[in-house]
Image (cartoon, rainbow, N blue to C red; front, side):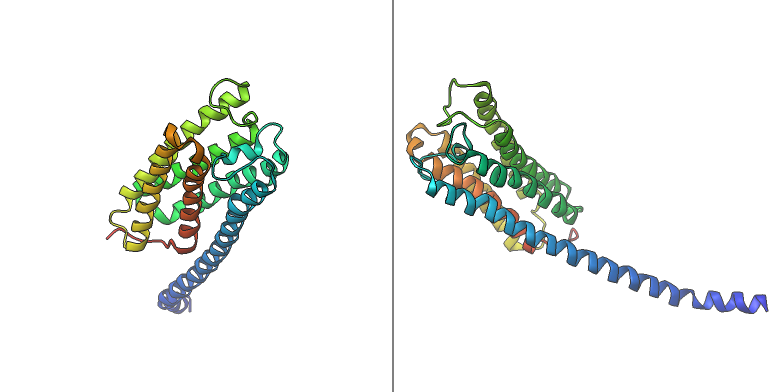
Length: 238
């Protein structure tokens, strides 16, 4: 009797294994749907907190021009809406961007260089906005002199852009064998725009347009994260 039960159990193993795989597949699909839903929500929040809100606050602020003033000037010491933009703009953007990257990097686990690049990009954005939150620049964000907070703010800006550019370059090279031509192309374009924008920010002749060039850098990285959030699927190396 026991031997018959044992034989029957062994005969059922493939069926049990198939049921187990089917259950795991359904569970993975459910997790992926939840993950995609979270990425969609985070993308909307990133666009709202990182783009719409700063432009709206900039419009409300007197003596502020989006073309010639840095984004961080909105959160500068004694700026009209500094507390509001710092708490509802800069701080959430830092958290949201890093969270998006930490979710997306798992989908690049077979593209190690690209995974590292994406992680550096997220860290760069996090550093830029989180340090701006804790160490706002002085009013007008002077390049030289000012308070200790202003000096930390300016130094962090240089480090942030270096980290972001390094991340984008690694991401571009790391995706050379990625199956999606659209993704590879958009990452390359984002890398080019970011590097070009930073060069123009550092160009003294473009001082009156520094706000525009900085926005081209920040908004391009936001757009890239949003695109990847909505389109990046788990791929294997060809």
